[in-house]
Length: 228
Image 1 (cartoon, one colour):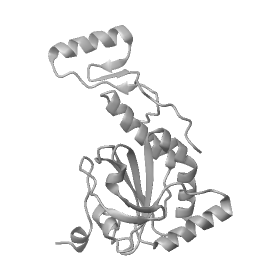
Image 2 (cartoon, one colour):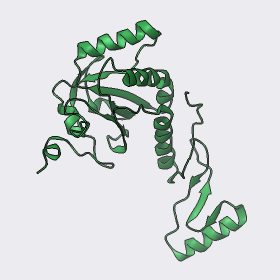
Image 3 (spheres, rainbow, N blue to C red):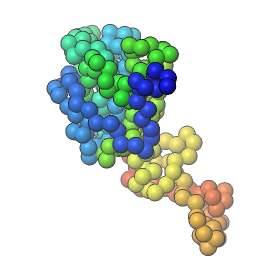
Image 4 (cartoon, one colour):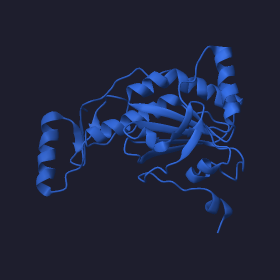
């Protein structure tokens, strides 16, 4: 069996996120502490690195937008807690920005390997830029993976959370390039009677191109201005 397959986890969308206990810059936590809220768990390659510094500044600036979506942030790298503290203090001294979320010190790499955050083809010691969006029930809903040299686009992570929440609340799907409060896609009818009813609705409201693709205005959407 391949070494990386043995050592690295292989978490998938739809499964319960593996629980863990960890030391962070805000004290000891466990994943289950976040039940009842959405969570963005993300890894970064290392402290005092340029791309990661820009990401932490961007995540910190966007933190109120995440909070408005009932979402917490939780960072992770295999650096020590002392290194994390020194780095986020340096960010504060240089920019005045306080990092408002905890950062896990995963010195053993146990959590990183459990989640598959280390790609041995890239590095055996650094985590790549993984993002796991976890729902209030602890289910992994979305996974994004970026290479070491490409920074994350925070507005897309916010948009994805909003899309997940709106799709769930409206029993719907979101189309390509969807942004908050745009129309969402109705579930396709499963009976011939439903097909005729849907086509009649489209004919009356001009809200689709056919029984299998029609749209509706979503309820409970939050049209936030996304951070630049």
